[in-house]
Image 1 (tube, rainbow, N blue to C red):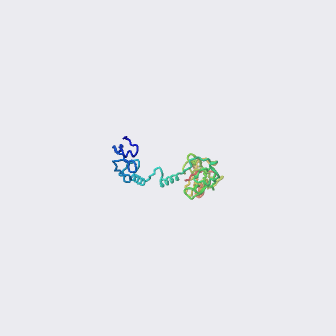
Image 2: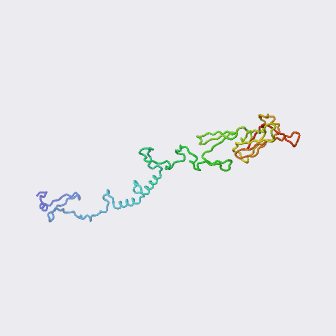
Length: 301
């Protein structure tokens, strides 16, 4: 009898043992009623997968359990921004608002004043954001200036003289004006110099009292004009000045009984100087006359 069966019938008749590597034992090889091979001994297993034990064990760590997946879903939903690489609706709205507030959001390229960058025409008056002195190289008349851009002038804090875009300075008697444009300082400088000296705040001068040809007259007067700053309340002084004239010497001016005074002020114009000879020779009731030109001086403040 051989050790190796040649047919299933031989196996059934002879009896053969085969080594089972799982259990580490030898098991008899048998043939069932249908002629199929079966193993004798051992057994006790199940053929239904649902009947297996340990199905709830985590035998495959490369796969996540339902509990692990549920935990990650809950953590994802609880995150304030689960996708930090994307912006939320609130963040997008904030970014748009910041961008719109920029003064020059998209205009970071230089433009040519002509050519393809600009087409059509636009009047200068239609532009916005033009300041008061941009491009104003043209001359303007007084009518071009509104009242807000003009200067109101008044004298001695009195009534307004006029409101104009330009002021004209006029030199009066014994007054010298020096006007210079100070471009660096943004102003026009006016220097006022008075000639003659003495009191009266620079408003001084001389005049001639003419009593006429011999035998002359007892009274004489002379009008002083060109005093644009004088007012009705100004104080005017006049006196005999010892200076030679065509008719009299300085000494005659010092010894003559000639009374001099100023009166009749005209605001913005001047005043009048009067001279009267009061010398009485022998008869108190009679006055003598003077003749010729006598020099007088004056001042006012």
